Length: 157
Image (cartoon, rainbow, N blue to C red; front, side, top):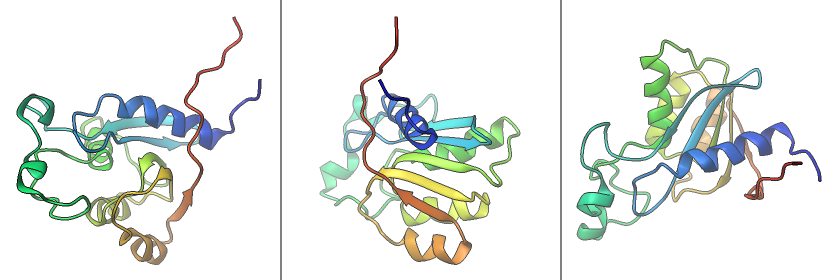
């Protein structure tokens, strides 16, 4: 049995967070971390308390909108947006943090993360939008796209 390194550990946690997603296209989970401590989490889905796509169906599918485009035509809030919102609701600064996410960000989330002053973004999945790359480079945000972590949980009983 080998102990996962810290990036693999938090990426695995992002996968568990993604299980709460209510999107019919992608289950995305994000974890904000600073000094090896979780600050907050977020997953993609409808605003709190409102009907979601699991109940109503996917508006984007109904309209034939391809992934990575026309984000405004969606009931859902992205996982990274929810991380930022949760941090704000609980009075937690994301400055200097690392975001661990199951997917790379869309352009809108990338701009928000730049303004939240994160320092690093770690992912294993690629979203259908690469426009975050030059934006993060200019902002000095380190990007690390790793291999997908093993999803089995290993413990000694």
